[in-house]
Image (tube, rainbow, N blue to C red; front, top):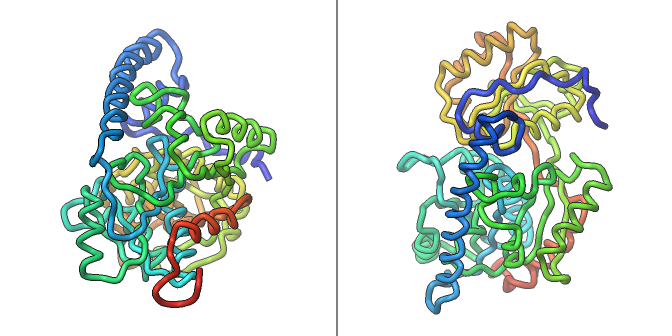
Length: 376
């Protein structure tokens, strides 16, 4: 059910240059200044395309793509920002564990301090605590070193579509239904890491947040995707399904607990509007939304200020994403009653609305039977 306009919070409070850049490239900001900025960014985007063309030549040279000692399943996207890679990685890992495999999750570790996992790793640790993770820029080396000392049937490459030097057995590419092609331009004029034609390298495409567009919008998007991929490539659809509200004191409630409650929302993700839409669809009354840049490093003062603002807005709860909550929890006081407004995370999972059986079939095709457990 779509939220009524009266149930929507004011536009998010912007706090950083990244948010201003998004307003420029999306044309949310109009006028001579933003137009001139877009023209300059278009020039830089042309240079970026030249770099991509040179890289594509390189990846066709013999010996530039290397194979890991175990099968590799990649989960990636075309754009910068959130398309649901973390819940999709957790979903794939859960499928593999259920089939008797021993997967390893491998990522670059963007934004992580040395020896400290980043927020995606922290969130994945909560979602699939029995699946080991390794973060290292040289992901091929990471897999090799892990596999020499530990049992490993398959490596799941988190955000791996552009990591071309590592051969993969299944390439899953996610497209966010709300902004699938990054405003139609490559970086820095838009959000695209690569042009849409790069989808032809994938093995299957998953449209995420498919529930946030109507049936006709989803049909048109699928038709557009079909222009860039072979006719036989599957196009699946999934939604980010709210699962629970996890409070700082360790208690949990069903996601529906938010219905008709006054919510102050805050997040440091690439698509804060999608977060608000999810809250709206739950029936929450979002009275405030604070948007920080993606991978924002929160300080205790940030959380304190957000809590005070939520209190001033007469909110019942201050809600953030699971990814952000990993960084919030160490900053929250141990005495949760001292916080003016309860802090909680909205936990979401990946739920397929079309084609989950296709994904499972493709995994079974590229992986040998697991060494333990039954046949996949």
